[in-house]
Length: 85
Length: 328
Image (cartoon, helix red, strand yellow):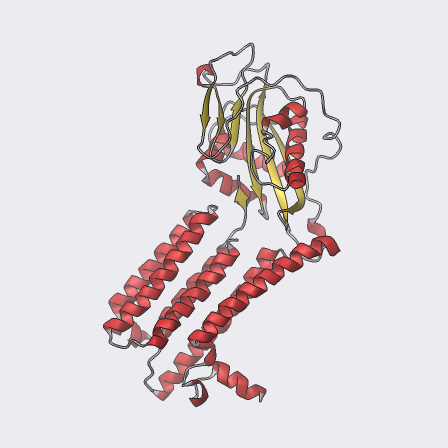
């Protein structure tokens, strides 16, 4: 994993910054659940695009990978969306 | 057979194209659907348990005394005077909460157009200034107070130096199919007393969220202007005539929630536990997969486990920290 982090330093930096910004804003907008849901949708899209962009740049892209990122983003957003309901 | 299925789900091998089946896109989407289905089931059980005798339910530790005490704490921190608990305001708050349960709505103004100020006059509380804050689904008073203080309009109500008295009702019931605890917090200054503000500023206001009203009286007469948000019905600028109806409201002020004792877990807590279990399962599979494939040094065209783990970590973190509750 350390090797992986080293190899894609910038990509992971962008991911971690994006996720950290999401955490901070998600907690900051509480108790506004509508804004929280919008942020969840936003981070799901961000993660999906990040995955595609990173793999596209490394020339390691396939339909399965696109679906995997979509699936992971969908699962995470469903978990968070349901808890805000 | 069972072992093979488990291995197929969690161990990278030929049968799953060297990626645990649980991490395949189809499984992730299925899992999302299963999670949504289970969540619905929990809320259905919760809904019917209310009719069959409560097993699951909303567990709240909020008490009216605490709400008054913490409101006064917030005011004291801002150098404002403390509010005195008023039994008529308590009655008005209880009536408002009961009205929301009986008419099944969550708003300052009832579907039949009843204004919050009607409950003041029904409780025979004549005011020169009045306000209302609402909250529901909170499990404890500090969280609810934090939510109110985080909202500029509710905060303004809590810290308003025009108020002298407070009334709070904490009532359990079923609202829109969900068992919950409603908290109604009413503020007021008796009609005879002079609010600590410039009288020229008085107006009838229904703010975006909390309601505030200033009732015109003979003593403090002003050209009462109206300030109404676009999607709210207009507030009446007419003085409220003295009322004498008070027979229903005097019976039960509920300072302490009564349902909590028989309830073990709220739907929110059950959902959180289940969701965290799902995250843990996926995260452990990702770690295991990384470990195995690192040892085998094979090359696969799959997503980045580390990125997935980061997303799951963030999701779990927010699930743990998430606080329920709605204010109005």
